[in-house]
Length: 112
Image (tube, rainbow, N blue to C red):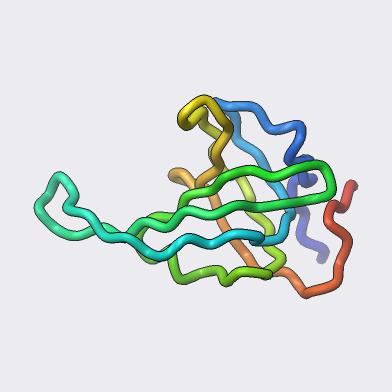
């Protein structure tokens, strides 16, 4: 039985305060940073940029997510949360998002 997945959205169509699924390439990956969280522990944070044929968007990864990608990886973010960060859209996995690596060399976007 085939698994169904939400269709990917083009980066140029992303808008803040919405959930989105995208397929893109990691074109920038900043160093991992740590900071103290409200509970007094340490939390990891990593910023970067995704790119598809239509544009780029900033992303942020938290906690264990920071080790999931490397620069140049093709990825699919399913049900990522798009928010406005310093006047520009940014995507994260939010509460229910998932990130998976894709095989290299595939098309930037697939529509179903």
